[in-house]
Length: 472
Image 1 (tube, helix red, strand yellow):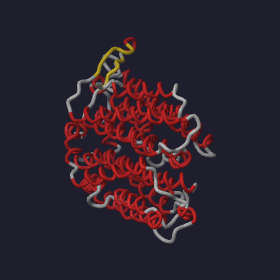
Image 2 (tube, one colour):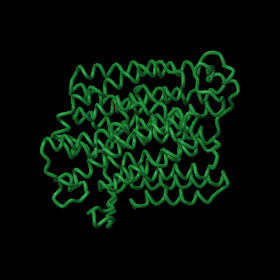
Image 3 (cartoon, rainbow, N blue to C red):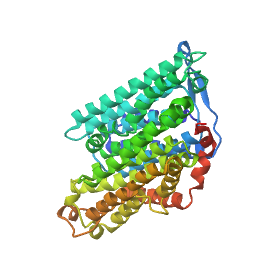
Image 4 (cartoon, one colour):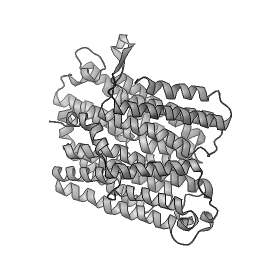
């Protein structure tokens, strides 16, 4: 079954290259993504056997796909995200639309591979497979500054990937059988100094991908210049690759180095949370505001993970899923407004509640989730993360807690500028969003409140891996 998570999006992506009609291409992409979602629902509710075949025998590397609670919650998020994005943006026009959609589905295959890989070389292969299509999506279909911004994105991510590859080879050299399996890496007998070296190589790669301060500068520009569908994928799912890497690799493989760097990383993360939040307050571009908001939320998850407390890591596992759902909702609303008004400036908006009340209600719902209001999904994760941070260090928890106030300021300020006041000239030109986008927003908002009121299924999904993630 696990190999189907790769074959479905890859085969659909290849098929799309031969479909020239835009409507047919869009429908094909949606059907392929929905099939993957159905597969993910089955995989997350049943026991699934690992997929293991020979791949590169001369390098002692095998094609191993395996799934646990950590992988399940992320493949479920990925599987939900792509049909939601494709349906919500189905009316958007792109040149060579079939190729655009094909590259998106190749990205989905890469993401699924990252979350399922049980071999380090395979993990690296899918890490690159997820990134390469995004370079083309940004550089071909992006905004006016796309070439310079994509080059910056390439430099950051290429350096991160290079550090990770060196780290993988370094670990391989210290295993008894010189294989690339996670199990072999777990039994590598590294000294404290060797752990610190390997930890640094992997952490740089993951920190760039999240990103966290001070390696974050590529993100707002890329989010602003990319087509919104691509931005949604990057913001909801792709940044989780870095957090997943920390949970899958750093915690179990380098316990000595991990514990030695907890204070430094947590402090950097909290500083990044506050920095991104203050920058978000000053934004007029709605896409840049959501981008900086995402940096703050990812920083909180990273701080929670490095606090190495059970309750904080449990909160981070829930928030991996919840943040993805919430941020897609915000991006879809922003995309509907931009597509119809031609602007991202909140100063040119206003009066959405009078002109399009349903869209305004949906915006308010996702805004409440973004500030972790009780009864929303984000409240559960953030409450657990702050509790864990308080156990780690009350002062750090207090500084991180300021971000709750700041998030309320920039999020509610966005709602006030966009939804309320007199109807602006731009908003006055708007009509009701297409039925697909509206349906997706409603379904996502239902997920927000259902998992906020009853998060037990997500707890159950991740229960099998929580204790394994703690560094003793």
